[in-house]
Image 1 (cartoon, rainbow, N blue to C red):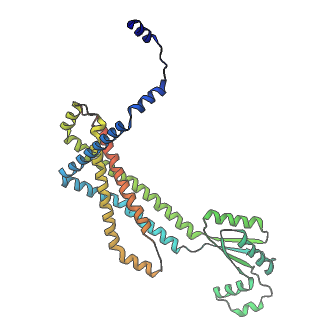
Image 2 (image 1 turned 30 degrees about the vertical axis):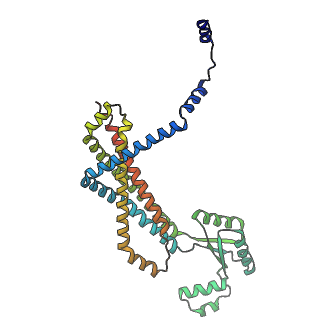
Image 3 (image 1 turned 45 degrees about the horizontal axis):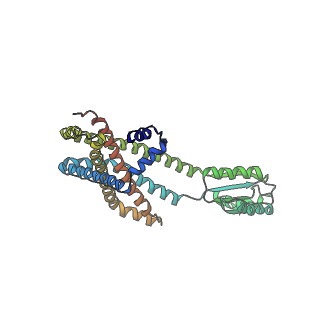
Length: 342
């Protein structure tokens, strides 16, 4: 009877849950206790590999110190360039004159009509900060003073040949927006004869900043590759120095990922210490030029805030240097660990 019952039970087709059944079994296997145990092992492994990388740094202090100095000096070039360009950009924004747009009316437009149009422009355009109306009488007087003409010559003029004009000052503007306002005035107002847009200085300044920006990124990419290659070569030498230890680890079942982890920490720490040395060099340079820079700001009554970009630059340097060191270590470990087999 027992054998018959067992045979019937063996012939029963049990329902298959497919992918959901596998997910359910995985969830059961990852009970909170097991998950905490796996996480604990993972954290302990990383702690051990992190301490191993620190011991490797301390094992050869002079050589690693030289590498850190090289990385710090290399990274200080793009960081210092960014520092100088950011200060130049802020100073350029402070000394930047407000762009002016001079609108000349047609000679047949009366003073009252021209003044009414100027009041309408202030309320019609958000980018216009103010409009200064200058009638043709004042314009002729200013012209006479500018070219040193004899005022008695004006008495022989029966008709003033100069038109009325309006000087428009823009706010929160860009070159494209200023040109759009210029085109709109030409198209919508027949009384406008000619518009002179004073953007030459600002266009030159923006072109210079764009050139500096491209130079900065070229320098950053080039020196970033230098950092990666330097760390990669250092990690390659470290791998060769620990070849026998790597062979023994692979004999007992260690994977390439497991063996690679201490070298990744090694490269990351090299980059991090190089970034710290970079910030130290920048601080020394800042202290060296602090007095003349403060005197320059005081002479021109400039107020430049440096706290915001200082923290942002420090964080960017530390994170970027650590990332570059990690990339260099990963490239070296991925290339050379595969060749080491027991």
